[in-house]
Length: 197
Image (tube, rainbow, N blue to C red; front, side, top):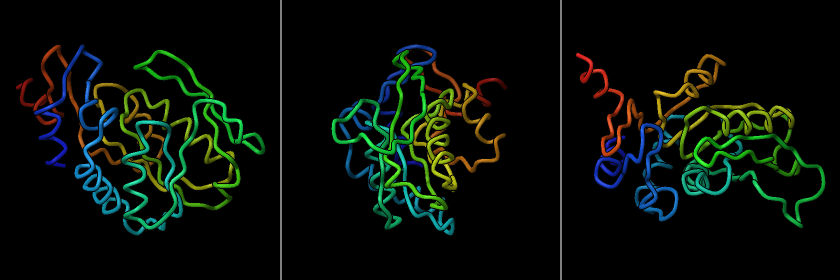
């Protein structure tokens, strides 16, 4: 997705070989125009999949997830990382390890909102090792729902999450694929191949 790529080139910061900072437009401050375009792109890529729900994880997945749900005309649900006083009964849970934060959270979703045979589109801001996506898949499986696909804003394709999910038979659509990070340098997947030549 060209608009996203340009935004990453202009505002993204490679802090290390594994960390890409995009908090000026994606996961702290959000660019609403870009989020709208991201939602349209996800809706286009998963057209015809008969999606009934969009599922994401708080908090950075909410922006792109909501925009995708708006374009698809379906509700969006976000898995909570923290216990809620109002979310107590019939919870679907999974354990998710965050690579960036180096912490493990139990995510929860009320079983009222994901039902058997729902066709769920999972959306997240980043894909690295795939832990968040795998946790959301587990939540869907516990509900008896079908995972219709996985939409990722930025995939770090040098880490194994995307490969694992694709080998698991899931349709994974990443709007930007980062092939390599070095401090101060971001190489997209296509550029990484050119760099090797």
